Length: 441
Image (cartoon, rainbow, N blue to C red; front, side, top):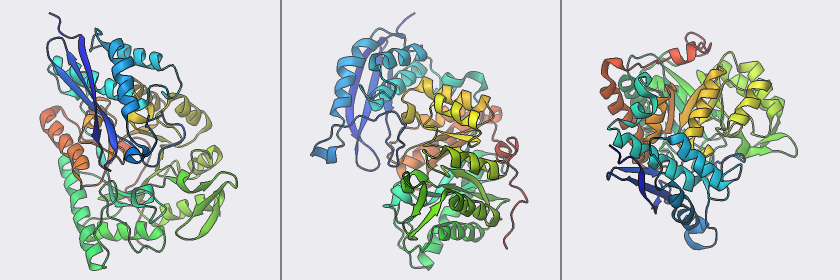
């Protein structure tokens, strides 16, 4: 017996999907088993996220990660060597204690998460289990409903439009593979329509089509509705729309106003929420992420009061995968769902705590990738292990995105008859009734 203790921790600089430096960590156990973690990076990062440590200066646009790598080699590795890789909570707790800050700013969330992911993968490999089965056991059977970007905007497309993501969510279907096939048909229809309209088929950071020539933000919602029909599906029945507003990116905190830069207009909190409610009335929208700014708790409550029973309202920047911030949202009645990003909080253990806390309070968890991604597919296994029910990783194009979708197809095949794909039920069970609520006017 034995062989499960950590023998070596190695770290290197790799590069993410935007060409920026990223942290990769290898952990090798006494018996030779290897685990690897590759850490992603966000573009529209919230103020309350755990700190991603970068070097600054002129090299690599100031985004080098040598400081984080040094912290792994000099601080984290010596502390982790000899620990039981199967005790994830103890490993993560050790690193959190070594860092000693509330936001992992001393050692860096990218350094800590790389080790957390690598240890977890090493333990799963040691136990000869798929990562989802190692993390979730026999109860890890739920395949996630995909939330897929078709048109990219905001910080993912040089702010060509203010809204960050125009996405689709397949409704119905009995398997993930069948549901994702529908999404790909929508993506193909989008490319064809863009070509017909003379729009360049350029890709945004997450693989969605670049919003060239848009005159308003609403044009993206209208166009996506048309694309769904072009693909042969009924909006609101076969396919719904999800929006990531990323409103903190254009919120004026001093004035408490939302500045739609491409439209050259400034809206009060009330006017901006009126606009979103109007869109929900006129388009097949099932989910809105970051509908108001991370600073605007009053607006979050107001939006929830008006739309909480009709659509999924996802908190990303507002909650930052942080139990304390989610707790405040629950207490103040803000939103009804939480975006889950591992690198927002910095360890596997804390990510699960956020999922469990949110779901225990009736909030839907949506596991998410970042705009600066790698080919690592850990979040797929995380979503299945936690039975989260939803997964958002970008578009149907670009290898770092398809790596996740393809891994989900493999996991579904591996689960076989024990796997469960909830489809629209994930929303219906939460009191969000999309069927029959919308028809084109």
